Length: 448
Ligand code: DAH
Image 1 (tube, rainbow, N blue to C red):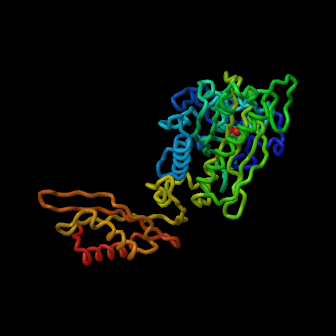
Image 2: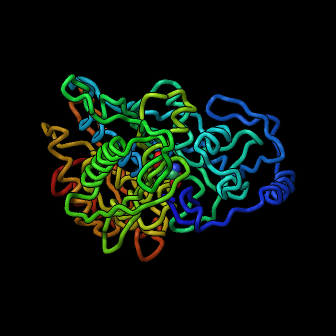
C-alpha cells in the first residue's frame, strides 16, 4: 500500500484473490526458462532455488546496490532524520539511552512464514502470487515488507524497535514504481503498567489489557480479547507518535487526516494522510497488532501497536524528486545535491540535465603566504561567475604543501553540463581557459 494501491497488503477489497495453483504453474514454466543457479546466496546465507525461483538478473543487481547505506542518497538522509528524531524524543527511563532498538541488517530473504503466515495474511491473498513476490524457492522469498521481521524480533525479546530496509515486489517500472523500495517499520509493545499506569491500592478497578468477559467478540473498535480501555490508550499513543513524526518531517502546518484501513496483522487499522503541495498523500499504515501475532511470538502479557512507512514516497515529496528511478542514479549531478547535508536540512532537488557531463580539473599554486582556506570561496565564485549555468558542480579535490619550496597547491574539479545540449570538449575548454585566466590575473595563482 505504501507505494501504490496495486501492490498492497491493505487492499483486499480492491484486488481480487486468485487461484494460486494456476499462478504457480505459470511461474514454474517461466522459472524453468530462467538461468538457474545451484545455490542462491544473500546476506551470508545460502538457499537452494527451486522451480518457483523468479529473481531476474536486474533484481539481483538491485540487491547488491544497498542505496540506503549510501550517505549521499536522499533515502539515507531521510532515514537518518527519522532515526535521529525518534532517538531524541523517546528515551529509556533515566534519559540515558534511546528507547527504540534499530534493526537495519535483517536478512532480506525471509521465509514465507515470516512474510505472510506469521502476519495472518490469508492463504489466497494476492500478495502471495509469484507474479507479485520474488521467490527463491517454495519456502523463501525476498521480503515484500519490513513487517516480515515483526514476529522474529518479538520472539527474540524485543518490545520496542524500528526495522529499516529495502523490500521487493514484482511490478512494472514507472515514475512511482520500482521493484525495490524502502520501508521503516515500528513496533511498540506495552505491559499493563506501561500502558495504563501502575495499580495502587486505591485504584483496584483500574483498567486491564484484556477483557474479562468470556464471550468477547471482535467489533470495529477492538479485537476479541482486548479491553476497550487498553485499545484506546494504545491508539492514543500510536497516533501521537506518528502525528509528531509527521510534524517533524512535513512541518506543523501541514494538514493531516486519519483514514480507517485494513491490514491482516492489525485491528483496528489506519492510514495517515498528509496534505502537501495541494494533494492528500498516504504516508503510512498502522494499527493495534493482532494479539494472535503476539501470542505466536511468545508474548502473552502485552499489547502493541505497529506501523510501516514507505521512504521513497516521503522523500519524493520532501526533496521534490519527480521520479523514483532517480534514487538509483549514480549521476553525481543527482548525488552531489544530497552529499554532506544534515538530516534536518531543507533540501530541494534541482532537475539535472539529461546531457552528458564534461569534467575538467584546474590545478595551481597559491600566491605566497596565502592560506588554503583563504582562496577557496574566491575560486568557487570565479568559476560560477564565468561558467554560469554550464557549471553543474565544483569540488576541491586535492590540496598539498611542499614545505621545502614553501608552495601550496590546490586542485578543483569542475563538472560542466548544459540543460540545452551536449557540450563538446572544445567549447568547454574555451570557458575553462577563461576561468584559469581570471584566477591567475585576479588572485595571482600560478597554474600548474
Ligand atoms: N506492511 C504494510 C505494507 O507494506 C505496511 C504496514 C501497515 C505495516 C500497517 C505495519 C502496519 O506494521 O501496522 O503495505
